[in-house]
Length: 254
Image 1: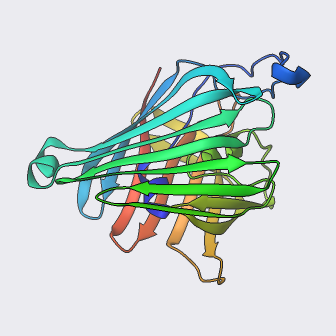
Image 2 (image 1 turned 180 degrees about the horizontal axis):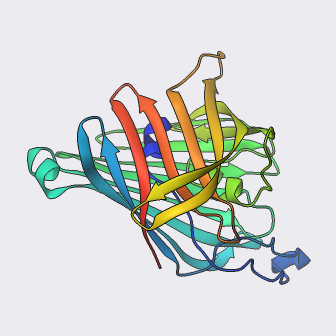
């Protein structure tokens, strides 16, 4: 879960979309991202100033189930130097319902050296269940009950951008990833000036905490800074993980 969040930050700019009817008569939610926009992040890891790059894109809005959904994609690659030592590639995607802002399906494709795998989670909102499948050298499946508002590792970042933030705000989100369930708490500490390769911008600092089903903490020193403007960029994200400390900084926005 945290590795996925550390290697992917999702965002896009533009004015909020006008509400338009979705399939089944449900209106689309107004959101601060738009189709086709792409953000690029530099990823630092432990002693590596730039260890890799994350590119996120709002690919399209398309029919999904009885509604429409945004197809969101995040791809992460190491620098050529690290890749020559150990090839890595991650592609995280999700279909985010344009009306409810809940994911229909999410997947993570990974290449780690010679090992390839695909992990897919499909949500049945009516039955309040999630169906998880892991395809590698073998295939494993599981299904389990979920709370109605459960997000996945990519959708949670987009959804956080749509929520009004104020100093002292406290939010809780159920999240599922890798066939497991977590609870994420978000506490807004206030506004700070954030320096990125694009310049210095005011952003809300949201302190994140993640616990598993047993109530044990996962990861440390997690935070995301979201720009205090209509674009609602995640400007920076940090997480201290067993593999080291990851920091993502916004480098380019298109």
